[in-house]
Image 1 (tube, rainbow, N blue to C red):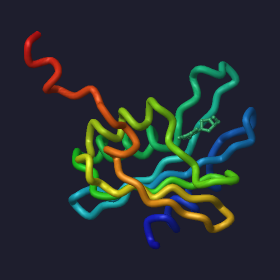
Image 2 (cartoon, rainbow, N blue to C red):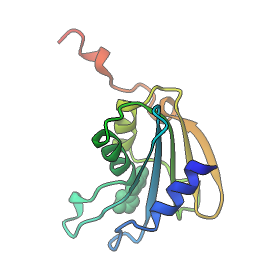
Image 3 (tube, protein in one colour):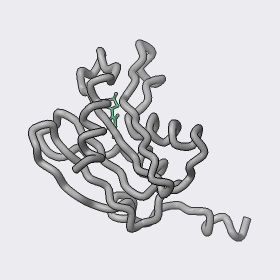
Image 4 (spheres, rainbow, N blue to C red):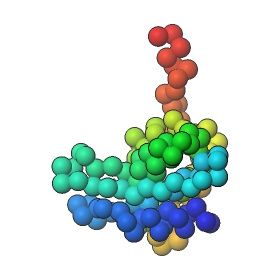
Length: 130
Ligand code: THU
């Protein structure tokens, strides 16, 4: 899978000296363009950012706002699940049926969707009465 290969490649650039857990993410937008991100840790631990957040930031900075497909990879015993915050960040720009491929560097993959990752998501409709 090409998008997963992109995620695997960018993972090599992750800055993860504190967790030693490198993550790579690749997003294909509806424009067809691919955006990449890796986790960037910081000695002030809470300042670190996830791979998915980096890819989303690159996408928005380039002018794309609609995600078509996502791939995330790490050296994990099972396909790496995005953290809760990243699930919400993905849901901002992706419809519920957008496929998300979770992978291990060892070759295991699990294909899920944004809606499966974030059931009951908070969305703009919940602010309609505000
Ligand atoms: N991490 C990600 O980049 N994405 C995820 O979805 C899970 C966690 C990073 C954050 C941190 O740099 C390291 O993995 C360990 O939590």
